[in-house]
Image (cartoon, rainbow over all chains, first blue to last red; front, side, top):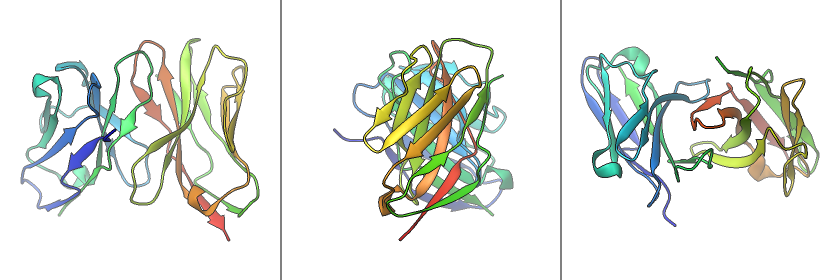
Amino acid sequence: EAGVAQSPRYKIIEKRQSVAFWCNPISGHATLYWYQQILGQGPKLLIQFQNNGVVDDSQLPKDRFSAERLKGVDSTLKIQPAKLEDSAVYLCASSPGRLQETQYFGPGTRLLVL
Amino acid sequence: AQTVTQSQPEMSVQEAETVTLSCTYDTSESDYYLFWYKQPPSRQMILVIRQEAYKQQNATENRFSVNFQKAAKSFSLKISDSQLGDAAMYFCAYGLFGNEKLTFGTGTRLTIIP
């Protein structure tokens, strides 16, 4: 079974530029998550989708971050404009969607904002 | 709000020895799940072990076992016969039953000494 795919793996941009990350979850997984992991910290949930609907986006900085999951499969996370403090690893995870099933993580996208 | 605390930023253990990683959490809920995730250097996060709060028996997975103390809100991970491949960041995470969102601790970096 293929795992969670993410691209790009690394991205370097200057502040005020925009950037987009892509995630392809495990086939058949209904729930998709985007986490932000700042160096030295644990992952923090940014947004959770159930199929193509948003379940929780309470910690998403909506003035600059946006995410979508068209057709309930792939997802894109966008930052516009980026700030220095957005430098982090952005992790995508998916789960089958039943209660408290294990979350499977992708390799992450490491973002550096200069 | 639920919080997860890992008080050991770094731990080291001799190969083949046993090590215990600590985790405490704060919640007023009774139905929840606890997880230990492993994040090797530059590799993706994988689940090590999970524990349902309603189960009194401690979970075990081969060389990995937990000591779950519900009243004390403690959830430690014991790694027996440590191997070089166990070197990683270990994150403790909490999930509330009925809400798939996970809250992570800050992690413990485990070094295995050959």
